[in-house]
Image (cartoon, rainbow, N blue to C red; front, side, top):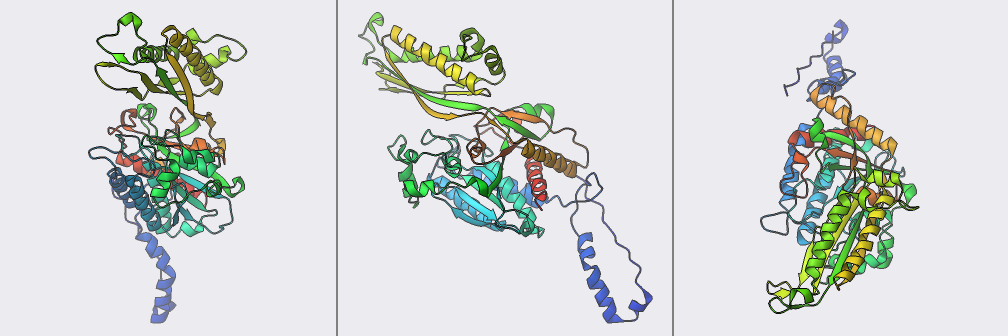
Amino acid sequence: MAAPPSITFSFPIPHAIMKNSLSILSFILLLSPLFAMANTSFGAENIEGIKYDLFPEILKEEAVGRLNELGKVSDANGYLERTFQSPASIRAGNLLRAWMEDAGLKTWVDQMGNVHGRAEGINPSERTLLIGSHLDTVIDAGFFDGSLGIICAISALKALNSSGRLGKLRRPVEVIAFSDEEGVRFQSTFLGSAAIAGILPVSALQVHDKNGVTVQGALRASSIETTEENLLQLKYEPESVWGYVEVHIEQGPVLENVGLPLGSVKGIAGQTRLKVTVKGTQGHAGTVPMNMRQDPMVAAAELIVFLESLCKQPDYYLSYDGQCTSSTVESLAGSLVCTVGEISTWPSASNVIPGQVTFTVDVRAMDDSGREAIIYEFSNRLYHMCDRRSVFCNVERKHDANAVVCDPGLSTQLKSASYTALKRITGEDPGDVPVLMSGAGHDAMAISHLTKVGMLFVRCRGGISHSPAEHVLDDDVWAAGMAVLAFFETLL
């Protein structure tokens, strides 16, 4: 981008003032705000011809640097892994807290490990705008999933603070870095945001990981003593919250295909996670005849292949009745996705017929009734297949989240803020900002039980996410931060 033109202010000085040196000094002091304005770093013009500081040093250079720094905070060597209350998670939280304080925010960590940073504004008793995302990651993650939303919020507030406007916000703004969204460690997503929304059952404290450590134990190891009583006290009161905004990478290819860095989100697909256990008869690989085996591995393989067929052609398998209508089946056509992401056997040895196989199933769709129809059909066929193979099968529902419709008002504001940001940066009309659906789950799903929600998607290369190949252009990080800043400016 070309450097902005210099600006010169010319004012005729009255002859009477020229005769008096004290008057000259007074006159200079009177004009000092204009001289300061003349030396400000301006960016591109907006529609009205007004020039704005684009804060590239905060919203771009520093934000990108912080994303890279945060991406190196990992529990693993050679790849990024940061799960609920792990040592790397604690280090990341401390880093985010320091950056929040650098932006002028008051900070604290709550009883579920969420990191908060708050700007009170001119009226601390007003309903609060919440904004944020998650600080945990999947295994072998990219640098942007979750982290981008936190860093953009902090950077935009820092830009306000650096220009003396942070204290002029008409309502409080609170950034939250949620401790767990991915659910990797405890197979229970939204631990952090669900606690804030008041929908996390106290029984979640006793859920344990693969090493037998409970959620409560993991918090205690981080010097956070969480009881059933203070867990319930984490819930925010709905009347104290104005809304929630989340910036997130798209995790899909749409924005890249249309050639724009930002898009407003109109809704989030519902999702269900299942744990399927298949038990057979353990035996020697060389001595048990094929026609006498009760092999859970091949039964699991058949179930997984059936799931793929069901989700590719739901109209072929689902029957129309009072629970499943033609419109329900049609709604699945563009949004239904099913994934088996984890499988394990016991014992795991090349010369042993396993005695047990477990695998996970992730089902997502925009239509909640359609998603339930898929789960019902899969479970029904599963028991028939297991009976035919003389193995025992069990299905556990580990997580359920209904589809969420984003608040139309917030969505419109975020769309407008995106347009403003892109026009300020480029100096050109960016055209219509696209509106998208989200197939991925986000903390906004949990927070929707507390308040209205809005989301802003940011373009990512190839639509790739949950992978070290995940990438967001530096200029797109800038655009996202500028959009958040433009949104905050509507609260001034």
